[in-house]
Length: 215
Image 1 (cartoon, rainbow, N blue to C red):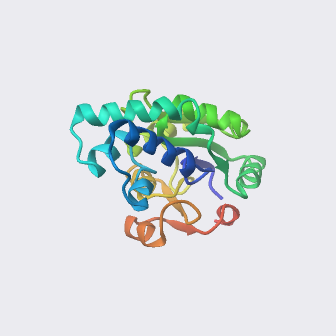
Image 2 (cartoon, rainbow, N blue to C red):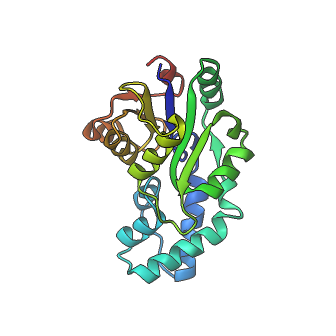
Image 3 (cartoon, one colour):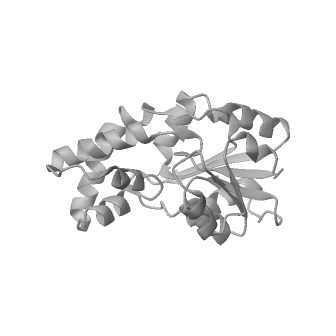
């Protein structure tokens, strides 16, 4: 068991595709752009919205920014609560806290809606630190967010080797954890795959939240 655990939000703590997909559709309808295949929708879970709209729809800067604004118009009112906590998460967090672990949320989602989601689903009480991106979507690089989370968790120092782990469902989480010199845990119940985690060099790969306790 580690001393410090950093958790991604979407696809790790909560199953969030309904709200995310509905808000992408809302923005696409506004721009009169046909819906893409489901794989494109799923690719939005993990990276920043700006990067996703830019890459997946070949948009210039101003158009991508407008799409992000339209997405958030719905997300910040309705979409963030079209969400559910994965089975086993409450039990996992209870166990970690009872064992004296220190927990953080490290997500590319803006901090304000992240805090609202954690409060809504009674998750906020478990976390000592919550780090997300800025309201305008900047500062969403997972490496930077994880570095900030570690600084706050440890009071400014670096954790000793193998005492901290980043838990996430996409390769961005694995890359960000490795860049900061900590262990990484890829979760298969989210939106990533074993192949993705193996390619990224995850320290551990687990099938269910309960498996994290046994590491």
